[in-house]
Amino acid sequence: MNRYALYLVVSLFLSPALLAQDTPANNMEILAEKMKADKKLLVAANMGLTEGEAKGFWEVYEAYQADLAKLNQRSGALIEEYAKEYGSITNDDAKRLLAEFFMIQEEELKMRQSYIPKLSEILPAVKVARYLQIENKIDALIDYELAALIPLAE
Image (cartoon, rainbow, N blue to C red; front, side, top):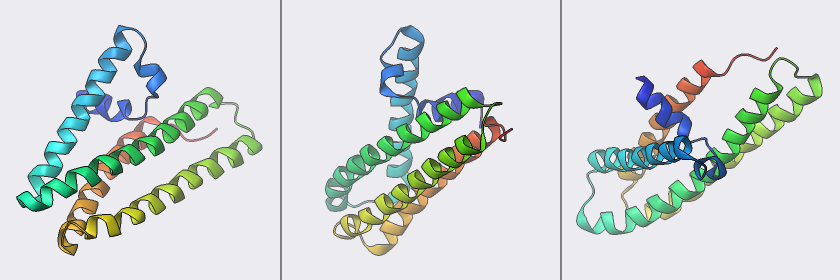
């Protein structure tokens, strides 16, 4: 992934407060919006939706993205907290950070599972699986980039 794409990935984890600040943050907001649009194009290009499926799907897609954004904001806050404490993390800090990390992971899994019935009302099971695969692949790329950026605990 090139540096431009990396900035886009990291921008997903910036809080709305940071995005609303001065010019550099506004640039990040523009990049985040571009990434959202690019993601939607990627999904559209790979879903093969009929006209009837598309109408219902995009409504559910937007709700899914809103729920995912909330979880991404929490993950971003966790990463920021880790960065602030990096180099001086105590055992208690590590336990607290791990507990929050796994809580976010559990909530994300529950959120994803909660969308299966909603998507299944609109799409055949193969297309539901395809959409969730696309989301999973995008998440894997983001996780890979973040793993390369975030140092191991000391």
